[in-house]
Length: 162
Image 1 (tube, rainbow, N blue to C red):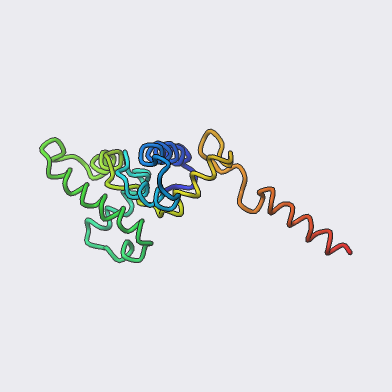
Image 2 (image 1 turned 90 degrees about the vertical axis):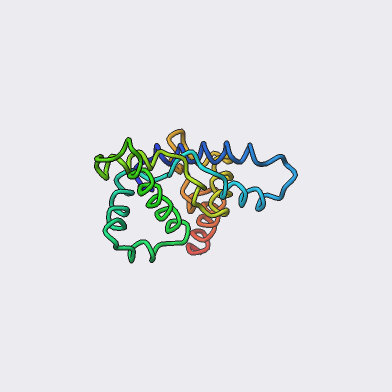
C-alpha cells in the first residue's frame, strides 16, 4: 500500500471494522476474532493500480524473483492478483485491452482475504478505538508519541538532568 495514498488506508480500516463487527458476536477471544477477520473476503485489493502494475507486469514476463522475496501476506496478495489478471484477460470483455486497464479492474474486484496478519487487524482496531487515526486514515499519534511513551521520555529527561 502506498504510504501517501491514505484513501485506500481509510477504506481498508472501514472495511476491517465492518468485517470485525459482522464476524464477532462477543463470544470469541480477541485473537480468534482477529484471525477470522484477517481471512475474511475483502471488497477489494488494498493496493494502488500503479503498485499492482509495477509488480504484476514483471510477473507476466516471468520474473517472479521479486515477489518470492516478499513477506508471506504480500506474496499471497500479488499471486492472487496475478491469477485474477490472467482470469480477467481471458474474458470476452477484456480481450484486446491494455494490461493497465485489466489491472485497474482487478484491483477493485473482490479479494479472497485482507492479506494482513491478525496482529495488524488488532492494531488497527485498537488504534481506531483509541482515536489514533484521523478521518483520512492517517495515524495521528505516532507510536513513540503516545502518552505513555511521552511520560517515559519525560522521566528519562529529568533523570538525565540530575
